Length: 356
Image (cartoon, rainbow, N blue to C red; front, side, top):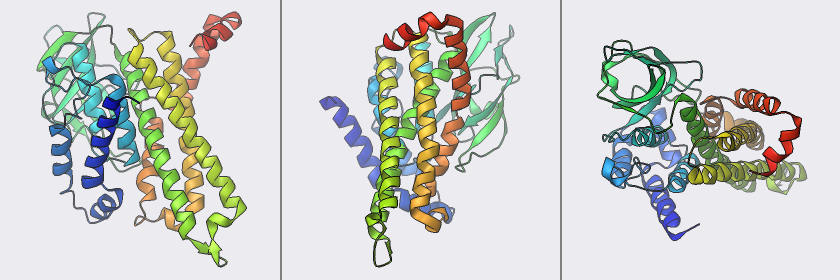
């Protein structure tokens, strides 16, 4: 990790430690007090973290792709319940089309491969996008639309859209957005980016967040096992518990490795080609599997207390379960990966794996 990487990670960590401590946020959420959100978002914006992937000349911080993914991993480690990842992703998408990013929270659409938004000859959008994360909390949406058979990026005022509110497994906003009749603030052709590329980037974003959350629940579970006493000794002394925690550590390590690999691959890529598809698919599949296994182990280690709203563990595990499905579940990516391998043929399998 470079010195610049360390500065970005340290800055992000300090902001979350001061303004988004999971236990404090959990207590506030139970009391339906969201007063902590405004100071947190202000600190993130003032530090340039929300627009880390946007160049200076388009209103952003001009950080590297790797820096942005490092921010997301830290955010996952704090189970951050604000649209930081979505705003980062929207800024990246707008920047690829040369559109300046506005201040404030943003999200992206569509986030499902079978949803399509089109731009008509009259300049208005048509279509709906389901499961858009933090849509109602966003000031603007960055939308990939089809116009005359080509992909364009549109900056949309969220207030102009019709929303059907929903929630994720974590209790975060996850809404259906109707773009019909909405005229974008700005539209531009993309630099080789379409809805498939957005899905790839979104899946990589979620993989990094899940890796951070898995590392966090490992730390939480280890500390709890040292403190929880049964039969007059800490449960960490029991071999079965040690074995389970070792499995959790293995899943967290695998997730971190996969997320780090996909971040490096995207950072060095010129286009979203088969190499990037393979990296993203592998990361989303492996990290998704680790999330399912890791969350189960963590809850088993905590016993009944881990299932209570008062305990912080659920802030992580419910987001892990939710993030597994965002931008395609591991089952979706496994099918697509299998289709690619089958299309290339048996003789291409080993070269495809080893050259990446």
